[in-house]
Image (tube, rainbow, N blue to C red):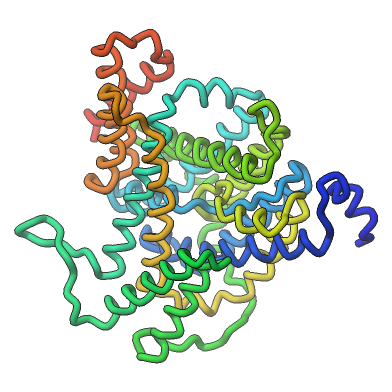
Length: 435
């Protein structure tokens, strides 16, 4: 591909960047988020989905999202299946509500179509403005606590306890110590600001697990990508299964979580890279279009919703400023499909530290909630605490949306409540009544 054409299309000169710098930024971003290729199959596999198919679907959806983001929106922002919403898919919907994964995938498909429509018709501003900022922040933090709790449990650090409901896990099990090693190693790497800390932590944990014979050696390092046959098209054929209010709320939750996660991440990354103009993000419609398109494609091939990745900040930090950064990341995801045999090495103890660390990062949203205003603090607190304690993201969100109008009306601030929030208030009440 002609370098001069690339330079003109991606505006290297205007953005004061180079082909080499953009390539390095794309590689850095990929290394920072490559863990999702192995964590996503592990999480969705809990719902009964074929891990090999999910691995390939994750790579395809991520590559497509990154390529569209880079070529159309021209931002150095990568897209992949989101941690948090995949946990909602597997643990809340499939395991908690006992909904087949095929039906849950159909819910993702419908949510992605709605996301696509509101992006095309520019309704996103209305929706963003309707949901209180405090609840948006609480949703992000609550999901962080939820996936951290999952990581602690799967790693053997937190176990069921009849006397106290939960308790500290036994330390006479080798795999539990493997989780502890991975967590400490990743924490050190994160504190030292090492690019790709989470991914490197997983690699180190896997190596230690193999050395101490806690993890079996892989049969090979590379192979052709696993077949998509077990998951491909299931979302479309099971759309008729979305026929109850409970499933309607599931679709709504997929939409809300993905929408606000992506919008918040996009704005944060745009601020970091200096793209914001007059408190607005240029080409935000194209950026959201990239995400909604990859989410739609991901549902068809067989993965949970995609979202913009905060790990893109690592590529931006090394100088990535154009869409070519995201293009490089997308191409590397396609090459990543060759490494599916390593799935056998990435056990629950290897992915657990990644879930815990991402939970820590997501919990940072708590600092922006105005805790001194009780009418806001209560619904935010119930949202955050409700997710891990009910083992359900949707239940936590429902608690927040039910209590928020009550506390705001009691505080005489009913005029600040958007009509959409009142609608959600009644929807979630009926939701609890049905389940």
